[in-house]
Length: 276
Image 1 (cartoon, rainbow, N blue to C red):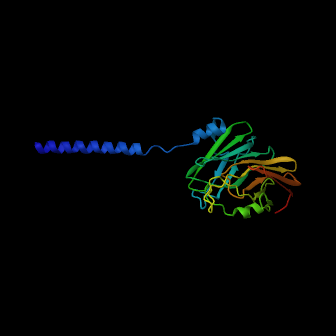
Image 2: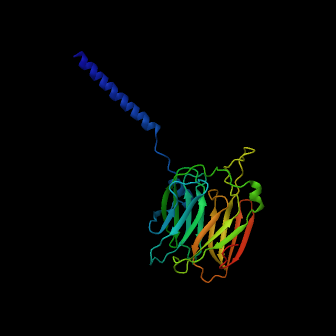
Image 3: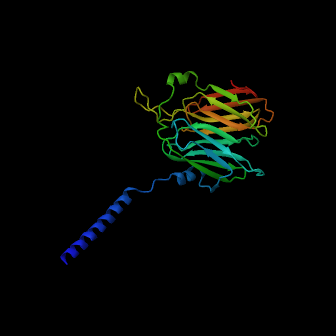
């Protein structure tokens, strides 16, 4: 009888200890913080968003090779017969210190169907692309990227090297291929700029380098707006924007960029120029 009571007491003690440990484990592992609801409120004024699958897409590597140079492509995939057009696309890297990486505004008759650039990713994170269509509605898609430390990674070039060519622009149009359709072409604009994030440390002084980046870019096809970008610290060093568009017999392309120190950079290129 005494043995039975002893065994029961041991069993009760074991169960109680297990429940206590379980409670402690649960308390020590809270649900991970999701910044997205707050970002919807801050960046989009808490507007309703619908599922954008089939209308837009965001393409990024699941695991980045270099967190400071992560390729991203935004694609417009409106189905045939949809008379609306995408007027804006906002790229949000949820866990970055400044989550809004870029907001692109597309010309009404630009025919832009894809935009590619390179970004910094600071932590494992969801990345959202939010498209505003011509009917005023917002559509969202997302992907997940494994990368860390991109916003604090050292610059690839020294400050002296970057300063010598600050703001130098290059424009490139790519040769037509058999895959081109509806007269679509690809072009690329590259701007020499350190695009300092404000989180990078000078390896000599061990002081943080102040944020200094391209925050505006405007591109015109002849006199009509083709593409504009509002940029942030998440855009990589030497910002590069590649896009697919419809030329519409354009004779000239023109670009103007501004940075956070008030510098203005301009460039003009004849249509059909392969590189300048």
